[in-house]
Image 1 (cartoon, rainbow, N blue to C red):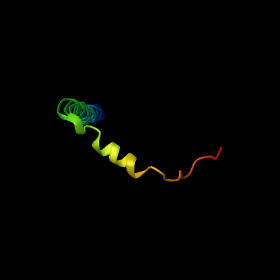
Image 2 (image 1 turned 90 degrees about the vertical axis):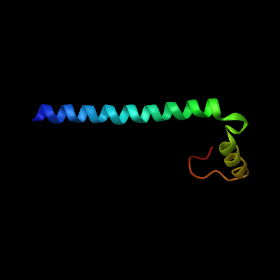
Image 3 (image 1 turned 180 degrees about the horizontal axis):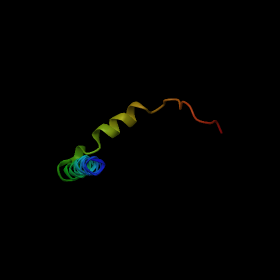
Image 4 (image 1 turned 180 degrees about the vertical axis):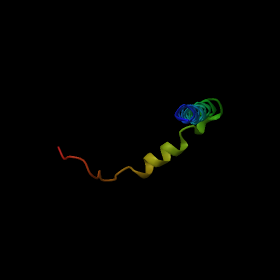
Length: 61
């Protein structure tokens, strides 16, 4: 019974891990191939919103 649970756990972890990895790879490939000129549109917009903001937290130097 312990062997069955161990095998089931390993297969589940592999399936979840491979699925997550494939999603990241597919998303990266899609952005590179089909992204066009607006590839970094949301990152650029977020950076524009954050210009002039005070930094919060961390240690002061």
